[in-house]
Image (cartoon, rainbow over all chains, first blue to last red; front, side):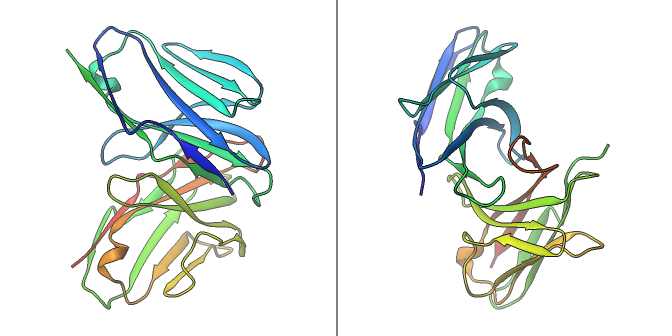
Length: 112
Length: 114
């Protein structure tokens, strides 16, 4: 099975940088995803890492270390609209198909 | 290209009634996943289907819950004899394939059992 941990809540200031960490344990790691979910809405895809290193996409970057079972999502130049939950999810090749196992999500509050 | 569609968006049922949740995947997608999200919790996998086949239902309760994805029409998640604990948001996701493909989520159906 899988075990995925991320902080429950974080607070940051508009314009700042915030790093949301995610640790995981899985038997057949086959990719890590970050999704953003605003309250009452569907999760939307942010990033995907399957190899070690940093993937940058505009203001958002995601890092993966497979040996440490660790990833982080980095958000730069925070905006008020970034207030949302950020979900870390892992795909395991031992699972049939493409099924994702999600962490509990990190609720980020951006303050002026 | 329309995204994943789910209906209804909100559903209220009394205890003991049946709930039917529908999901139309993105055009061209033949892989459908259902997830449940309890208040203040993360998404939990329920079932993975391809056209006319259930591939993995390891996350679905053994009783009262069933899912199908017929050759024609949307995928249906059916909950019989609903109880208060079934109140949650139910999200459907679809993908083009496995392995290299990301999942796209629908807007969800919020089920309230009174």
